Image (cartoon, rainbow, N blue to C red):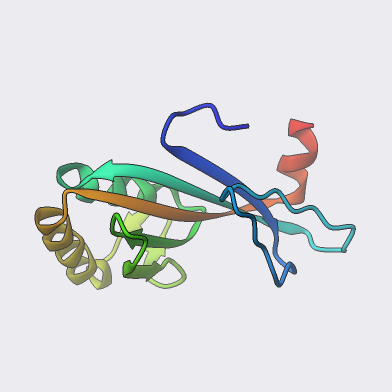
Length: 128
C-alpha cells in the first residue's frame, strides 16, 4: 500500500514482460517459479536533496537500478547498480555518476527517482 505521499510502489515479477496501468500503480503477481521479485518505487524529490538520496540508495545494496526523471517524465539518467557496489560501498567507478547526479540536481528543481529493488521470495512470504 502507498503509505508515503509522493511515493508510488510497484511489485513486479521478474519474468513479467508487460506492465501497464493508467493510474501508474501496478501490482503483478505470477505463479511462475521465480525466486526473486522486483519492487519498483517512485519518489518525488527536490534537486538539492538528490545526491544525498542517491548515495543513501547505493548504500542499501539491494538496488538493481536507479532512474532519475524530470517533471515531464523524461529520463535524465539511468544508473545500473550491477557493477561497483560491494557491500553497499561506493567505489571509484561511481564518482563520475555521483558528479553527474549533482549537476542534474543543481539544474532541475523537481525530480522523480525510480528505484528498482530486488527482493527474494522468502522476504515476501514472511510479510504476508
